[in-house]
Length: 78
Image (cartoon, rainbow, N blue to C red; front, side):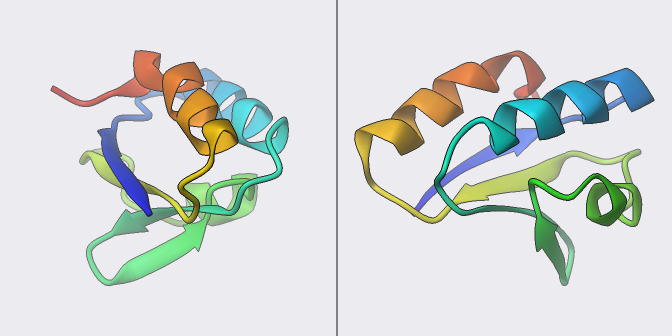
């Protein structure tokens, strides 16, 4: 399992993030507090508090998981 803090500050960011996660076959979630949603679900993501950084969790240790993390680095929270 690999983790990264991400910030999705706009509707366009959410749409781009979902498109990226859907282009990979690995399972991933976004976690906000005690809530976790599928990172491939645009409706799920919009149910989270997007004003705060989210924890992006990839449930894999494969090369594809590393590629997904590289693909979403532009959303990395400081």
